Length: 297
Ligand code: FES
View 1: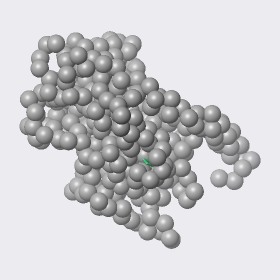
View 2: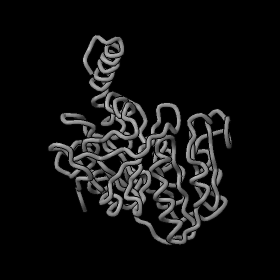
View 3: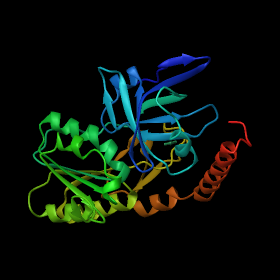
View 4: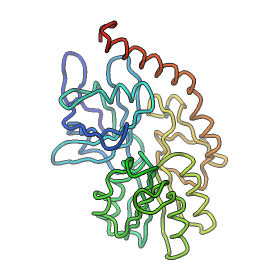
């Protein structure tokens, strides 16, 4: 609905960072002042952020919003140059722009039993969806998965709105040992499930879809491929769904997980890997030089 300047400094739109928190290793939470975005956004939608003029555009699914306070929350993991750069942004600094809300909201409706499955960073954008279904009166089981206890975050926040919560860690250092897929497999034949919603790595969402397929449980995956414009014009985020081709930015991010061609998506997701690695390597090199005072910042 809106693309709104929160604060205009010189000619640019700026979004102040009110809070910054380290949630887990390489994982950062940002609370941005973004009044109109917070009023307009719905669970499941995303924004595209740019740190500075000429910078890369990064799509981030909204992890929380507070309409009264006029804020949105983003959670970012350092995986390359731009996210590493964002990690250096402290409380009190500004993001150049934050465009959105983009994409279709998650369909939230009262259902008897909804299972929400989040893996790693995918846990964060699952939160507003959980709260939405809770407010709609659905019974909710949440399965959160992390590699290890040190990577886990927001268990308490999810417990508040979940009727049942299952924490899985791959090394067994917290909750139950195993993956979200193991957690769902244990659950799927024990009680009827009306819908599964999953956000996380592609391989995890694909495996979740295979658990629910024989049971014919409606399964929604939030697909976040490489995006450029975020408005359906560039074709970067295309997703094959059976005979159809859809665009995650305008038709999604939520898609029928039983129809998504995950194999093609995984290949497309790697198409700039070499360039991304090189850009990150150069950025780290520059940072090293900067720390030694050999380059201006
Ligand atoms: Fe360009 Fe979706 S990001 S079409």
